[in-house]
Image (cartoon, rainbow, N blue to C red):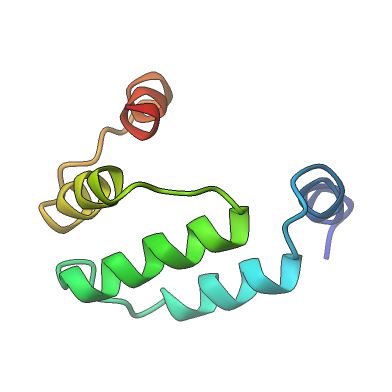
Length: 86
């Protein structure tokens, strides 16, 4: 692991209280995931919310899942940020 990667994972652990091992588990689980399958996407959204210790309302979860399944996710950071806050 490079120093850059180590710094990112140290930051996740110290500032956001996110266990790097959990990040690796999720990353590994999505390698061959079918992002057109609503159940798969919904499970991933819930996993990420749990890891980040951030509650996601049913309405927001539905919006995120629908956007991913329909391949309608905004790609620029400003729009993406608004998407997750809204």
